[in-house]
Length: 268
Image 1 (spheres, helix red, strand yellow):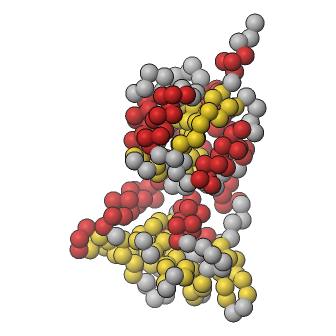
Image 2 (tube, rainbow, N blue to C red):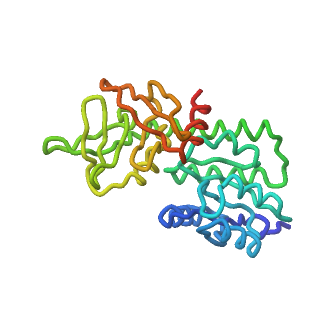
């Protein structure tokens, strides 16, 4: 006789951004055999809900108020009934580190419903089955590469204004984006254009990070594929030289310097 409750996968969602959190809850709730038992907006709330609801799995954003997602994974591993963890984030550079936390999967935003269903299938396949570290690393890197290919095939475009028209720029065409007088200016090899519509640099960062963009400074978002050179600068900062005709120089803030070095290691 089948024990029906054991087939139900009880999931918790943890993301500090309400739209992303709500979307993930909605997508999971549409998958047969999945029950969403809660949604958290901070690291503290995540731990509290894990302890009170004892979920089978948690879909966790990397950047959570109160703790980094990878650190939170390590904390969850110490719990008596640790849930399986799927990292859901816009930041691809943490994939190699994620395997050390024994994460089941690593999903890049923006995600398709099919990608979340695939992560659920992996959780179910793994239940009760130990996974070696090399296997975990290989699985995460393979999933990351598949997601990158899916993103490249998506045909995403960034709309900008030019001479009364709306141009659609592919992410790989964009050199960098900057804030200027409460306006977002987007640069490619042909010039600079105001972003079309109400858009913030934070929103662009979320959308473009999977394409290799990096927030060098609070006012600059840089496509790392178009960085020609860089050099250390005073105060623990760096200066980037872009590969445009003007060889534009962009400063990496001290707060972002460590992240810049991490991203370089991934690219190399």
